[in-house]
Length: 150
Image 1 (cartoon, rainbow, N blue to C red):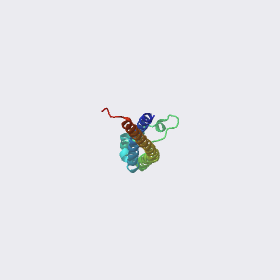
Image 2 (cartoon, rainbow, N blue to C red):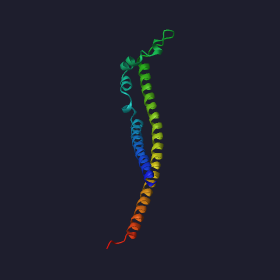
Image 3 (cartoon, helix red, strand yellow):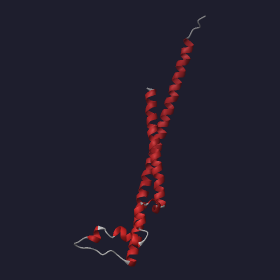
Image 4 (tube, rainbow, N blue to C red):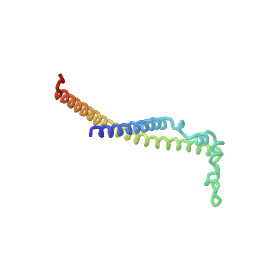
């Protein structure tokens, strides 16, 4: 029975440590996203927001500007610059918000995982102590029951 419990706790501990590694790395990446959204933004989106010319090249073909029934004109001049800058801020805000939500969920996963590890570590430790204590008792009683051959 003790051997089965030891195998079970060892498997749970292995899986929990793997989960902790994944949640921890996700947590760290999300911290980077919250603190530096420009760094973690996809390259296309980042490059499209760097100048009015690249913004126009990237977004002037959107459906709202080529709609045949009610086409809108693509902004120019300061209106284009303001829209590009606002879109860039909006995109960074979206990245920060998504990352902040992920930080919270990763934090909860890490806390639950640590509690799971702690509980199973204690169970494994007590099972091993009980197992080694039982083995010592069996060895002691076996040596007491032996009679010398002489």
